[in-house]
Length: 610
Image (cartoon, rainbow, N blue to C red):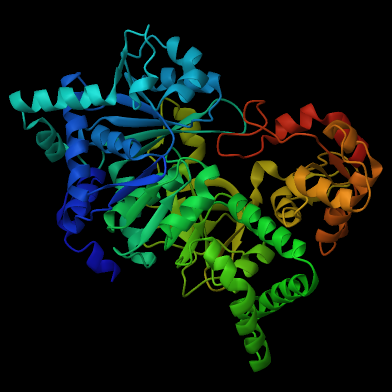
């Protein structure tokens, strides 16, 4: 089945545009791409997509874009993101994607460091956020706005995407072969993109990826996962991120109908309307969905809540047995069937009712949450990847181990370093290096071609890999014991009262955790117990009753850990960690060094001073 989807592709030049164009034409689906305008879904046919991409490419060519030029884009998910991306690649130019949430100074750095000649901007909202950074970059010759009403009147460098397409139509009349000639000249070794890693420390590093890096991933993933032309997908993770961008190329090449979701706020309604069959997501999404389901189940009251709690217990027992290959008794099978019909069927309906599997990446997902979704008939296949190596491995529907990141895809080597347990990767998927940064490249890629991920893990007897933490995130208590914070944080996120936990204690006497509560859930519960919740969050953070309630969950969830890993004290914070305050990266990873410095007094209070 998988081979059939890509049959004949091996005769194509191994480049991204060739794979996507061939798939658009071959399948020629009326809903190859879809997006929502107001209350109406709009559809783009495969052949129409190819025509628009080539028209944009011709327009860019008329503006002087040539092979090797760096063209940046900062936009939410929308079809134009993909049109512009493929148009840039068709001219042998280089796409430099920028996160819409990127800090202003980092936007300026990326534009200047990459030497971008042109920048595509979605519209007014992004322009307002990034205007100061963009205006100061002298090397930018042209700004192209995807939304016509987003063009600032006073900016002489600004035009619209419609203007580019119009230029493309005119240029085609005088030189219709520009794009075709360029497509014929693309080499697999040509640079396709420079993606700047968000980095928890220092300036972002520009990861250089070629057409071969991506195409090798398209082929390997297509062989490894059951992706069908009849599938529907919903793209909610940002296309500026390596995960969703690679997934787009994979799904496009396999003829999947791709629906764009511009923000998480639209996700619930889009799931109901699109009814996706396959989808990528991050653990944060599953945690939020799970807590909403649990909250609703607990609020039902009476026999409904008892039924809900019973179903959760049955689901955990059933999938624990399945995952550990223990025998599942006829009685447990019957109980699960009842829970499935009365409770879990509603979960499936909540994600559209047609989902065959999710692929999750970016961070660990706790076993409890994984078992709950699997029990509900919503398989979550955890995978693993990074900007420097695209998508490297994942569980398979027929070979899944909850808690693992699965096995490497075909052609990708993974191993564990003997010295420190670091995960190493080698294959055609691995980057060429960091742009204009030979020192960083030399430290990341060894002489044997292995990329050093910075992640610590192990591999089991069946070849499934596991990630335990980041090397640089591991810290030592004053008694010499090492703490792996990611694993503890994964457990803490099971609590519906905990929104953001950050485990701390480096150099201190004991481990502790800074917690941003789910304030709505916490207030609701405390109000039901008669506590005054009509105060500022700062006041509630100092209230012993609120601290004790959240601390109770933290203690309970970590009680199975080694004594030195267990959480004994927590410190509540009034507001979420943010990108704007420099506490998180655009991919929502915590900058632990910033947190340690900013909250040093709070950490001393709950962990001791060493």
